Length: 152
Image 1 (spheres, one colour):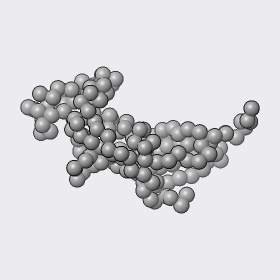
Image 2 (tube, rainbow, N blue to C red; image 1 turned 45 degrees about the vertical axis):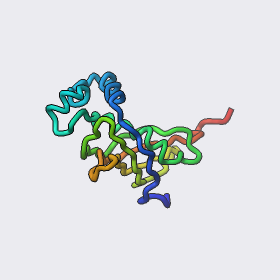
Image 3 (spheres, one colour; image 1 turned 135 degrees about the vertical axis):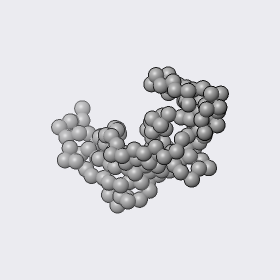
Image 4 (spheres, one colour; image 1 turned 180 degrees about the horizontal axis):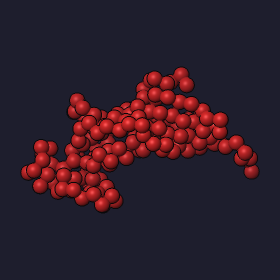
């Protein structure tokens, strides 16, 4: 609990490739040209090429947190609990690099032993003043043994 209010981790830089963007487009059936057609996006947008889907950038939080924030001792797994706020601040261009910053905003242990954490997260874009996104991310960490379970 002493870490509440402090930055608890920063991930490594990760490249958002056109291949990654195309795979996300295929998985979500979102083939808008701004994401999937580099030539048209270069001609018709102010970005000079394609950009990542905002939800692709958001989904990277799941891997970035594993790089940046240690697992809570005595827990077996973490789960998404949702977001209180998400803001897409600037686009991530194809080939751009991003990283996550995680500030522990709130933590409480529920009577069940589940640990609820709220992170203020920022996904930074390399060489950009504005981040790609900011969010308040809620997660749950399940204890290694839930009450009522017994070791076999």
